[in-house]
Length: 287
Image 1 (cartoon, one colour):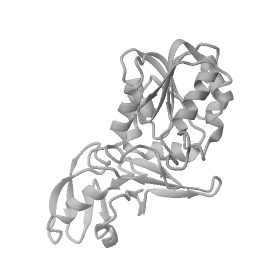
Image 2 (image 1 turned 90 degrees about the vertical axis):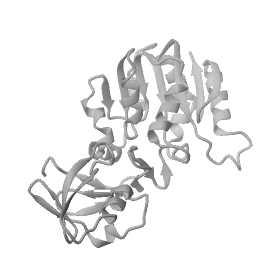
Image 3 (image 1 turned 120 degrees about the vertical axis):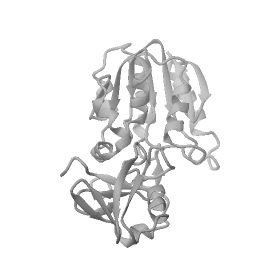
Image 4 (image 1 turned 60 degrees about the horizontal axis):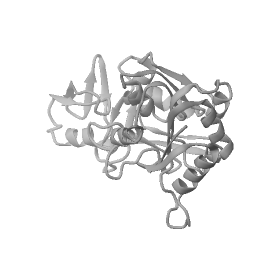
């Protein structure tokens, strides 16, 4: 496959192509990497893009689509929706366009990974990290996701190393394709760990990390990383004075007597964490 591919079409780019006179050949400036950059592309009449020596047809159903969420991926041979069903896990993965110039998010069986109702994945990531008083030294990100948190944490000047765990090979495949995840594989400070976080932390010495960012899947998908035994291990590997950010969101808030964040705060306090407090979309604590 050429280094030119994959390329992507999202709602904003499709809208831009529909705004031009497609009956004539012309040069257009568009993004084919989901807003990471823009480039001049020769657009030939009858809906063809010319990229290098490749002449790529854009099917009429893509140009006519009113779906603002779907991202289309061209792999060098054909267009397809950027999504997949994994038979082994019985989960459906779909990359979602959020807004122009912002990174996409992903849905796993209908559950969105980022808070995007009044923002975007970058803003969501920034607000989570802002919940920590200090980000420095050695950092553990317990769940890779699309890599945005690990990438952002590695950019803090006092951070020496970011270890980030992921057990789901499908998520890793999306990261390898995602233009917004490239820094995950090119930043020397970031060390991906491709095993479940429970296994990894069992190998970590006591008092090793300065910061732990625990942004796990929803409770229904991974209850084991909300267990008190797991929190005890996080406490063990965190340095005295080190900080924990734990994302909980607020699932089923209308049917719960106590929110997941409140229950999590109680468990963290019982484990020995100090200064346990409610923060953006979760709980903050200190060893």
